[in-house]
Image 1 (cartoon, rainbow, N blue to C red):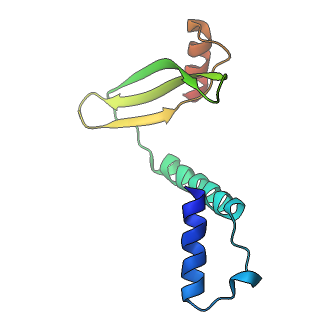
Image 2: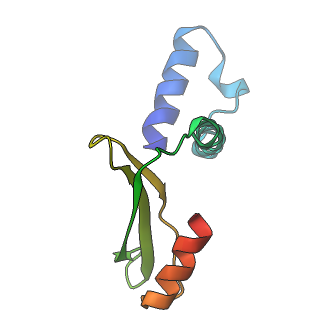
Length: 112
């Protein structure tokens, strides 16, 4: 969790002799740093991605609980290699406007 990361960062800084009162260690900073790292990691994965010659596209829609009374329609879209049983790659899990087949088809086309 972000709170645990913040506490760990503060402990490490304190152990290194850094004055914690004069540094900016908080949950927001930990969240922003993890967001930047995720974006960098996603870009790297997309650049290195090579689609196999024989592949199958899969998708499946699910309704997920987001908050107490809110739900989100999501479609998991992934590709698997026919020649390699172990090859599976998640292409995305975007939100749809509703759970209809037409909405799912539109989202799958955008992901591709």
